[in-house]
Figure 1 (cartoon, rainbow, N blue to C red):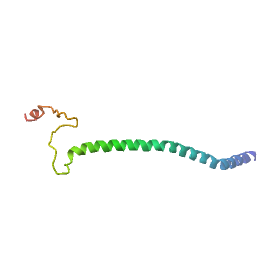
Figure 2 (figure 1 turned 90 degrees about the vertical axis):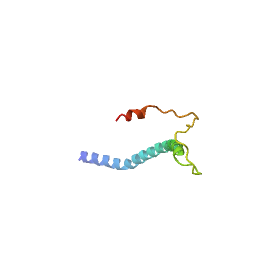
Figure 3 (figure 1 turned 45 degrees about the horizontal axis):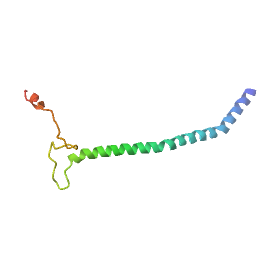
Figure 4 (figure 1 turned 135 degrees about the vertical axis):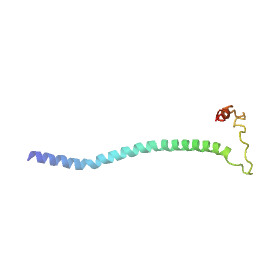
Length: 96
């Protein structure tokens, strides 16, 4: 009889303290998320800016200008220096 009563007391204590433990775990989880959320947002903004700038630089050379004039192929790079391309690559394919 004593073992059944001990089991019943343990069950009652578990039912009493279970909501408290659940609330503590939820509060800790929300606290950690509240601390990490600004960092996640900041990293997402930085990644979005990097992707947007790189896509803008690529598309700037591929899209026509607003007045309809295309840039000449093989023009100067962004630094103003001419683009150097390897020579002799086509001659290897012409042997076939």
